[in-house]
Length: 304
Image 1 (cartoon, rainbow, N blue to C red):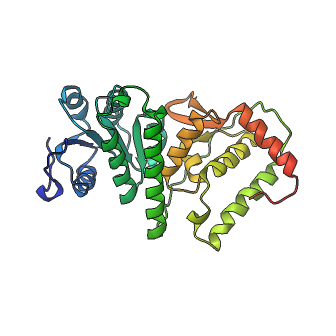
Image 2 (cartoon, rainbow, N blue to C red; image 1 turned 60 degrees about the vertical axis):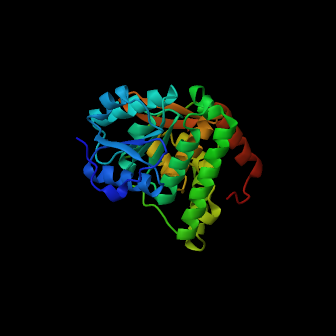
């Protein structure tokens, strides 16, 4: 299959080609439009069924863009795993763009070398491609891209570009509901915090959106901390998709923050023992202790 559907979507130039793998014709067209708008040459568009073999023999590509919709099939999972491994080895930059229903299985399948976009708008897609092209071929990509200072700064700039564009466009996302997570028993340290205290703070933060633009007060790190504390007190596990909803920012932005919090040791990732594709997130013991002592110290003061 070589599903290039429109010559107008391609911009042939001297830039290194971008390889597109998609789970459907619509997904391939969506990715091709982004690449074409950026002025890059599309080397090929292929199905996810063909992608693993094509990636193994791919001679050169600046970036591999994987566009997924529908279900997480075995072919899609293999394609993502191959791209994640190759990107980690420095062969090329990799971007995976998907629908919200695929957030949980994808988060557990990719590492920090892969940019994961969930229900991303045009500005987020272009920002991700810009970052991928900037990093492609850099010597540090053979090492740990996530720890490189210049790469981290590029990610921050990409995040800000997306946020500013979203603010100007007054865009909002409508994340899909998630199934109730299974209960968990959590051992905690620090003072007890009444669950209603945390719930009141979360409700107060959400109430601001009735009177002001929601992105005016975007603070995904604090929102995620509060959600995980609430879950810990209630003895519940929190899947990645649920935590991204609690962050009250676009899912792609929430994922960037989540990865940062994990990297800094504030959050812990736990594999679902019943579903290897799903990952739960919880507070690290030191983070839980700090939050509980914080609430104990502020007492009845309004914490928003």
